[in-house]
Image (cartoon, rainbow, N blue to C red):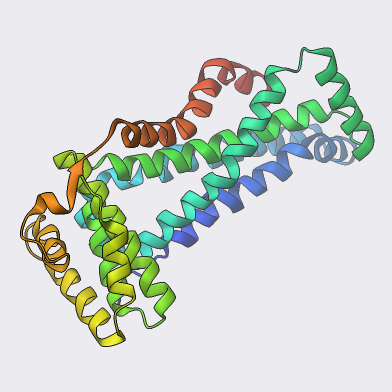
Length: 306
């Protein structure tokens, strides 16, 4: 079965770091005034100061774990070592889960950036006051700003962790290898097809990076394999998976054989400017909000939060 060499579930760790810890921080941040008001009225000043110190220390620890430990952690391993240590499916599941978290958190984070960039406009102030009155909160702008702090650390940690993976020169190759191994082991046809296509796409990205070429026949290859009878399909996927145990261009040679051509030019083409710009756009979609926050809001984060 899958190469699970440790009992650690990376995806569970990501849920703890990117969802549970920020949720705890959010509750503490949004209700800190009420909490400390109750403490100041019912306990001694010494205890109040100790709890306030513990609160501040806890926030620092949460943010340090997210951005200082969790995000850069993959940098200590090569791609091959990382996949072997934590297991093929474990790594891919974690990678996909982090992407989903970014798909949700980046639009929310961008929305808050827009709100705060326009907060000096009268119509935006009136809009914030209207929402504040509707949901019956005392200081919506302050609460939204604190949520923006949390989202900044979620987006930054998730984005940096994925980026550290992607910049490694062989990550896409081992990601493709992992997908093919998983596809070989899957019993459900839908899951088998999904991992097979993910593997093809990842290997294509590997070729784009190292050869500046792309496989323009990916869809035809996928259709040919997935519409074959079950035995033929399994044999092909098994064979492709085995090619990843040889040199890094062996899968390409097998795909050309599968496409019934000995000429690699029949399945490869130069990567277009449009595709390069598209990849750059996807990168900037995650990087720009983080850069804007670092430039405009970090001093205010520190001042308002601490």
